[in-house]
Amino acid sequence: MPVLLGQKTTELANKAKAENDLAKAAKEVGATVKTSDLVGGSGQVPDLGQVGQVAPQLLDMLVGNISGPIKAQRTGVVAKLVDKQEPTADEIAKNFDQYKDQILEERRSEAFSVFMSGLMDDYKKNKRIKTNAKAQQGPQVPGA
Figure 1 (cartoon, rainbow, N blue to C red):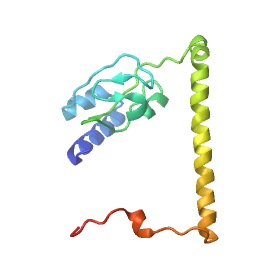
Figure 2 (figure 1 turned 135 degrees about the horizontal axis):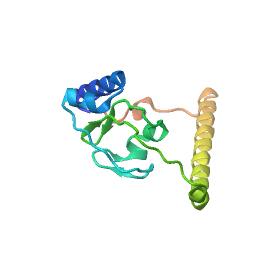
Figure 3 (figure 1 turned 90 degrees about the vertical axis):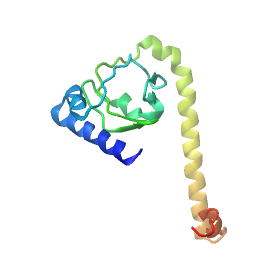
Figure 4 (figure 1 turned 180 degrees about the vertical axis):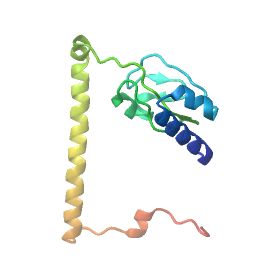
């Protein structure tokens, strides 16, 4: 995020939280206020992108909360959650298998990563493996 954009977005977030009024703070700093429809984690919001990737913290906010500064594509965003709908029991049941499989795969990946990290640490500690420090630093650029 360019420095000036980052500073302005942080200024907006701080003013909005202090005054508990995003619209007023946006007007004071010359920012544009936009509203989106309700979206889930995979939903797209103009000028923000996919919520679950760019700003997953928004999904955990309570109604009325104002976010901190968010870097989004080529813009800075401060969001206020004005409505939130929890999934119905039918929606949960319909998507249960998909989410169960997704969470299971994430846990497997995490467990394997922890296992490999521990194994590599053990190998290094017992001098069963050596690493090339120069190779880990990446290529050296002459004159840099």
